[in-house]
Image 1 (cartoon, rainbow, N blue to C red):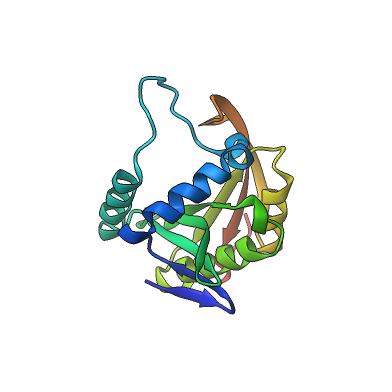
Image 2: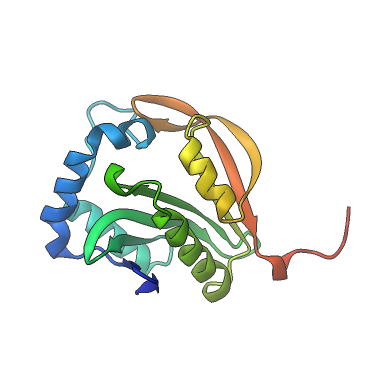
Length: 184
């Protein structure tokens, strides 16, 4: 599945992306470390590229999660995932992303978030999207606000990030056509 706007393309990760993806992750390890998920169990390591890709394919087939490479000028510069997709009475999901230090701040992630949000709300018919980030991640806060997400809550010790359980701020976007016209 391909989503695109101008020079930004979102496409599935390919087997042939392994070398480029691993090199980007290596070059950006310090840049991403404060924001990246870690395992609370030191004996469990993060998956390899192939394991991650296989997991993403299974999750996409089950429509629980969809992951795209963020591509600019034909090269991968980041990744974005719509995860925790749930239908029924919730009809929601959450968005996570990363971008290389070299291209951060150029508006590529807001474009990607808007593409994924539009797909999730209009094509999948989801009602609610969330983006959670560490409170000190000012850049991600700006992405959420720029994309029309509103601050909702502080989640205490929400995710294991950079070696410890970290608080997160959660921003939400609710599909306008699914909002109730009733006031409490």
